[in-house]
Structures are given as structure tokens and as C-alpha cells.
Length: 478
Image (cartoon, rainbow, N blue to C red):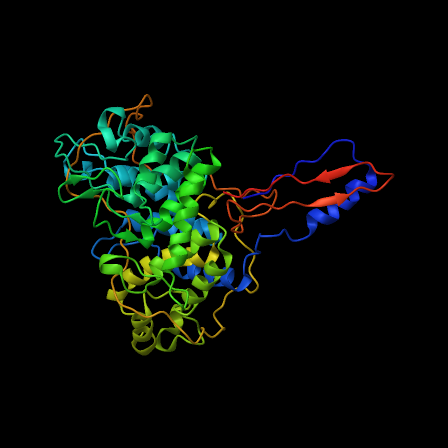
């Protein structure tokens, strides 16, 4: 977050000179981005850019996977790599909004997936496109229309899916809610109800559960579910969404984000890595990437850099890649996948896992928070790419499958109360919409992971006969 500077009035020329010298010095509690990690992130993004075909990333059995394509857009936006591929991908997603967030293409009219809609809204805000006219759709209004209203009791504020035949069950989870909160925060403001629902998914320990529902139906809160499983990936997403909401003045968001980040620190392995929950319990680069990104956003710089080192150990380079040296930049899901690639190369049926792992893992290397991607310029790199650098000698271990990107559930769900903003009419044409490229803000400093509760107090004694005391305003990153 760029740091604002409040200056006292009546400063003389000597005071201004002194202030300039102090302001140029490194700020306490604000860590500079690691150039090696930033270079590794760019190498990962360059490899991922080469996996696009006509602006699309494929799925394991389909020529297009829109959720994964959006993940690729976020990765390219965070690193500043290959703007032409990023713009082509944004145009493709804009032209296929309904292919991702509805079943219209399969003949099932009237279903709108809340999580997919929220992820589209966030993607539009990141790329510099217009969220209220993305592919002809007002994604902000659509997302607001899918936020459950006041008559839904403890479901109030939840991102839901609209269905012509409500079943009482909704597929949305904490990932979806986080995308809704950060997407709305970045596109004009987020309702407090949506923030409150996300906070209710946090248990007293600080971690967040993945699913708001139990087998018996919706659960009012994380603490109300005795067997709630806290999830690293969900917590990392929620922390970043809440930091973005706190920046926009949402009540309770900053404290919840701090508690979530502290819980993430408690879950970090000795080598810096993380595992998820359920099938992703084993150490993996998806969980490590998201957690590292969240830790950097919350100001836990040492732990974020530990996570980055664990990720670097899973990255192929020309020096360590063996049979997969030509895939330099790609990041393995786990140590087993890394070892197999070095020995046997990267088989076609493995590429989907590598694409998903690389897209999320590089976020823990570049360390630009979700709330700032597309706003802050990417961190500078110390070298063009790390392809000639050997990987660290230690690497995360563990097994599991990659964390899936947000997908459209085939089960219809209950419809949330429609707020005052309503969706726009469907587009009259399916032609790709050329997005407006994001122009990074060049003012101030890029986000570097200062803690939301940390402050810097700089006191400068003014020259020229006791003009007074200048205090630089309290600095708060969110």
C-alpha cells in the first residue's frame, strides 16, 4: 500500500530538504521485495504464458478452463509478464462470461454461479477492464444481486448461486466469499454484511473453514461447528480479502485478518512450506503460494520469505531441471512431482497439474497481495530470470492433489435476496471485448507487506531557529 505523507504547515526550505532525505530512507517495518524471489516469479509467469493458446488455458479434458485462465491472468498481472497474452486472455474471458458462471451453454437457463461471478468481478478489476460492463455484463451488480439479504438469518451476506429450482443447499465456499469481498471492495465498495459473513467463517483459533455448510445444513459460524476443519488456503484468501475490505473501512476486517495471519504462522512447516486440508493436506506449492502471499500482505515478512524459499525449491531451472530443463520456470505441486519431472521430463498428462500449481505458487514469490494486483507495479527483479540459478537444496515434502480452481458446481442452489443493484441485460454479441490495459500506479511505494497494525513514527528536528516539530503521520498498510 502506498504510504501517505501528512506534512505540517509552515515548513522552511531547510525543513523540506531534511524531510526529503528522511522520506527517501527505508521505512521501519516495511521490507523491500526480494529481487531473487521476484525474478523467480517472473520466470514462472513466463512459463505459464507459454501454456496459453489464443488467450486460453486448457483444462484436463477440455480446450478451455475459464477458472484456470483467470488464475493465469492474475499471475501475469501480478508479475507484469507478457501484457499481450494477458490482454488476449482477458478478452477471451470477457467474451465467455456465461460459459463460466452459468449453464446457459448447456441449455439450463436461469442458473448463475455466485463464486464464478465473484471471481469474474475480481478479474475485471485486476485487469483494468470496466466491472460494470465486462463482456456486456454488469458484474458488480450481478455479484451484489447474489449476496443473501436480511431475511436469510445467519446466511445474510453470503455469496450465493441463483437457480430456477432452489434446493436449500449452496455450493459457495470461503474462496467464493473472499473473491466477492475483494472484488466488491475494488469495484466501488463492499457491503458490511458480506464482510461479516466471511468473518463468521473464522474460528476462535484464527483459521477459516472452507465450507460454511455441514451435512445437516447451513452452520451459523465456524465456532458453532464442533468438527470444523480449518483450512490454510481458505484462510490465506480470507486474510487478503479482509485486508482489502479494511482499506475500504469495513468494521472488524482488520482484526480478523490479523488473527488469520497469526494462525497461518502457526501452521507453517520448518522448511517454510504449507499444506492444505482434506486431499491437499500434504505439503504443496498451491497452499504455500497462497499462504506466503497472505503473510506478506499482513506484514509477516520473515515467514513470507520462508515460504518463498520453499517455493523456489520446487521451481525448475536450466541448472536443476534435468530432463525437464526446457520447462524452466514451472513450479511443481510437490517434491514428488519435481523429482519425476527432473528424471522423466514433463509429460502431457502432467501439464494440467503444473499449470495450476505454477499459477498459485508464483503469488507467494511475487508477494503482491490480491487487493493490490493491477494497482501496484510488480516488484523489481535482481536478474532477468532464475533459469541459470540452482534450486535450494531443501524442498517441501508431502503428497496430495493440487488445489482446484473455482469451478461451477452442477447442483442448483437457493437464490439470495436481490439488493438494490440489479444485473445488466445480456450482451447482444459474443465478440471478444478488448479490455483497457492496467496502468500501474507509479506514486508512492509498492505494497511490501507492512503489518496492518504497524506504524512508523519519524521525528525530524527542524532547522532555522526552532520552527517546530514535524511528525510524519501514522502509516497503516492494509
